[in-house]
Length: 393
Image (cartoon, rainbow, N blue to C red; front, side, top):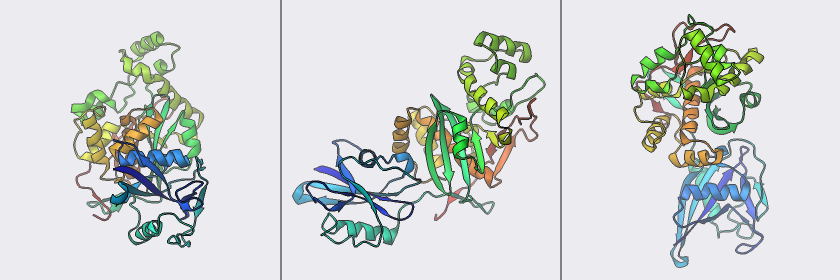
């Protein structure tokens, strides 16, 4: 039996997206966008693929919900219906048929204008009656606090070729990739909280203490995920050999090859903050594994690069953002050319930033030192969660 999909895309202003058919079936009539589900293809994968091919709308700006199916036994086919709200502005890119936004005052049962023998009208009425699934933001029962739906909270994790950025803006999750930190800040300069998985605050002497050792003690089973931070002199050294020498001279030790690989990103973040002092101590260092341990109530023992580790972390984040899924993160990783755990870490930091914005956080250590440029050497993480529930549960 051949499968097809049709996709209801609602604009932020409430209008519904249609294509006007240039060929049969339904020549000259308005129809929902959609297409064929390939043999063996997952329904959600097919819906996001068709949506992008026909409109240019990417899955990082919309979350689709599987609303209903129609099975036509006499035609040996079925139709899966998906629905979602745009989470930002988009420039439509037409493929075969012209695209048009229509307001909800139209009679979608009018078969002289709309395809599907009344099916589109039925779908619209279902949305009117039952709505579209929305991201749920957590309610923290034991404190009486709720996440601020008016806030803009950002989580950033480094990846090959740039930065994966998760933004929880007015209760919606957006995922984006940027090549540099400056572009993120230019796009979201009025954020409420901004957590990044990158070193902020570089020691220049052995007397300046960073939060790394204390953070390792908090997640003993996963302590290897927190590396030793090089000194400022090493980060700005001309080459790797000089960096090793400077670190031995200042801190009395070398650092791992893994550290060498991220020194350019340390330098990028530090340089940006030195040149844009208004963001000093507003953009804050955090660590996803410590944050996951706080959101989970205990250290997450699975490795985030393994499938089991990805699925476990998605389950934890689903307490806060219901709409994320393995399939959507996999699609996003493919589009961004990054690892799935880069996206998961960014989402974790965005969720954590939202909690920080509501005062549900702690600082490691309690009284952090500053480096020689005035940057706090700290990690900002959520307080340990004992009980979480979502709105509506």
